[in-house]
Length: 234
Image (cartoon, rainbow, N blue to C red):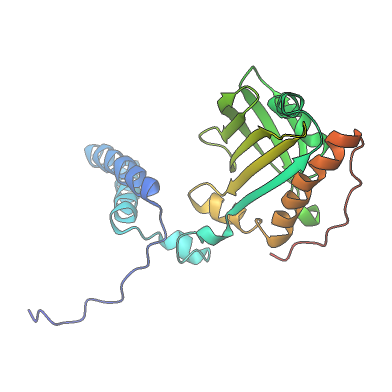
């Protein structure tokens, strides 16, 4: 055999690492079970197992390719907001407000609701721009330094990965400097790739406006007016 012979086009990798591992594991179980039963259903199982093992070993899913997913999701579509703002309120008051995450929808227009499950966990629901519906997930407070810092992460298996951190620093004039970091990421897999397409510049701008609205809300107690953001271009 000619070692220089063409071996065909290289398959693109469009399956994430955790999916590859799961595909190999499940595929092996299906193949073994199918080969033990030499009937029609057994052959179907064996064939499905072989497909999953190929999918995991190669990192290429033909079904994803047909659906238009030729490569892994573009991480640039993730949203990372970092900002610093000053509010004319004592740091303890500002911290206490943020510590109860269910207060966030009072000034964050992209957050429809946050319902506390217990002292650290909560259910979130966010609106997408352009009347495209909403996304839901559960989050947990993972860092809590009273008066100084709050950090939260979405729980594993959530529809969207969300993380946030707010630092509070008392200023010399009795106000508070806030350092806010908020991140939205699509989860791994084809469903996550679809959600990533919703993370548009319009959605990012909406989050930025929401954070800046906090200053107005905490200082006046008046909820900011809804901004007429243009529809997202997906």
